[in-house]
Amino acid sequence: MQVIKDIFGFINDTFFKMTWLDQLIRSLLKDVIGLDSTTAFYESLSFFIYDVIKIFMLLAILIWIASYLQSYFSPERTQRILQGKSGFMANTIGALLGTVTPFCSCSSIPIFIGFTKAGLPIGVTFSFLISSPLVDLASVILLASIFNWKVALAYVIVGLIIAIIGGSLISFFKMEKYVESFVMKKSEQPIGCATGVEEENMSKRDRMIYAVEQVKEIITKVWPYVLIGVGIGAIIHGYIPQALIESILGNQNIFSVPLATLLGIPMYADIFGTLPIAEALVSKGVGLGTVLAFMMAVTALSLPSIIMLKKVVKTKLLITFVGIVTTGILIMGYVFNIIESLFI
Image (cartoon, rainbow, N blue to C red; front, top):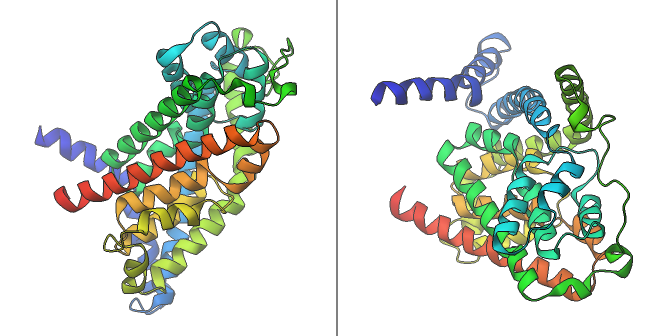
């Protein structure tokens, strides 16, 4: 068993955490360039260079793999899988499909509109809408590369639970009437983003080309947010005193979880841009639950996505959606912080 753990630890440190890259960059900055390793500038610069290289290397590989898998789950096929299903199991399937269909040139809200027009139950579409930005294959591995696999899997499980419960509650309260009429009007038009070829007819070469195109497209979209996120993380890592951050977002502050959630909502970024900030906050002593609450708020409750959603649902449904997701995030944050303080 110990041999297996050692092998897994080596693979994780070498290929995911890339500890060798961190050591190499620190050595180059100190021994070749001659920077003083005791300064805040050295800490911030090494953090920035290491995280930028690591995230983009992992992104390119993981997006290619995830996009290749996603070529088997186009919005049209996802619709067919969900068609005719209802109840808790349907919400579970919708949430799970949201984790394997994140990489699309269209946002999740237009897909939500397409699913609704196709006649899928409103609860199922909301389970998909919640899980799609929260959880995906690439984010799981990136989370593990910064924290560990236990944290990454726990994040996935919590994200799925929030999506399943959220969709189930919206279905239970029968909130279809609070969707705008133009969305509820059924349509036979294809939904989502076209890959250029129907998934049943795609060859392996087609899928590989599609995956490469998705790597280019997604990195083109997210690179500014990654650089901004890493930049903020580098400043936090090198310049902001740990005592100050702990006083605001540390576990000793009972309001740290709701405060982190509120801080995350105005941000316009995806999980790739928030990971470096999360990494820096954890290194400064912020509780794991508080950090995960911040990340989930950014991805699931960002102000731009709420504004977009307001155009297709009425105020009561929007408030219900935000309330359910926020409550789930807050509960998760406090539970994780308690578990961390007791067992970690």
